[in-house]
Amino acid sequence: MKALVIGAGGVGSAIANIAARRPFITSMVIADYTLARAQAAVAKANDSRFSAQEVDASDVNNIRALIRKVSPDIVINAVDPRFVMPIFLACEEEGVHYMDMAMSLSIAHPTDPTNKPGIKLGDEQFARQKIWSDKGIYAVVGMGIEPGMSDVFARYAQDELFSRIDYLAVMDGSNLTVDGYDFAPSFSIWTTIEECLNPPLIYEEGRGWYTTEPFSEIETFDFPDGIGPVECVNVEHEEVVLIPQKVKAKQVRFKYGLGAQFIETLKTIHTLGLDKKEKVKVGSVEVSPRDLLAALLPDPATIGDLMHGKTCAGTLVKGLGKDGKPKAVYIYNVVDNEWSMKNYGNQAVVWQTAINPMIALELISTGQWKPEGISGPEWFVAQPFLDLIKEYGSSWHIRDEDTQGIVI
Image (cartoon, rainbow, N blue to C red; front, side):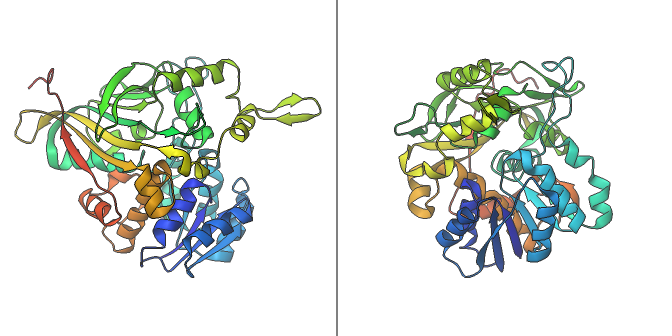
């Protein structure tokens, strides 16, 4: 398989490091707006199958030109979600397969944003389903850790563990700290702001999708493997769009373990207007407040040596088991930053994200997954994916949870 990876930041660089250990990749081009960053990712992978290119991910024609130059079997989008549509449309025009880890951005409801969804995450992509099907090309969307592995867990729960799912919540939490920083997001600040400050999306059977106020329904969840209790809140996330399309669950939501201090910092960023994307004039220059914030914060790709702790991604499922009795489980994956830095040179959050598109690519290359048109992770049987997680150096586990309140 010949792959073109657009984005040489934390996740793109981690994809290269992981791909270098997989023989099914015949060649991989790493492309970035800054050629030097792409070259650094290739040098780190230290593999003759890899090369670097320059690309402007905001320019459809520039991306199309690179696709024609490289002639890949698939393009992997490893940049911020704001670039999803240019890359997606370039692949559509050039007739090449596509994969991403975050979907096209939402647009809030114009008059009632905290009750009704406007344009949901991924709506722009799914609206082009027929075009992709007619062209005979596929797009596997939301194939990171969350969304991604969390969706695979949801599909596995439906197929193997539950006869009825009453409640499904993707629960993300960590005990990560970064030396010298009180506030240092382990992922892109652009992505963090979009997820946390947009109205959270929730799905309920019979009601469909609806939204709430940011940071709603705070609860403390005890994460496994020594991470411990973390305060979690509803946030907007792709799983809430994807999972209900293939998994029959009465409720679906995403809860992010931000912790009280992180939540207050994000609220302050919003209050001060530093989350705004639109440029403002400062003296003789114009700058986006969010771009300024990103420039002030440490690059998530470079903080691995300063980071300590573990990150956990998982899916909490409650309902009735295959035997018809009350059942509740948390299916999860934990990555220790010390381990990922020692073995791959990538911090835990980006490494945990990067293994999933690689596992999906391998399953596609062997024919175990056969995507058509536009598909999410839960479109496919889960077991082959889960079987490969250990081979990629990670693991997955099931923890029994409290069944109180589940009615037969």
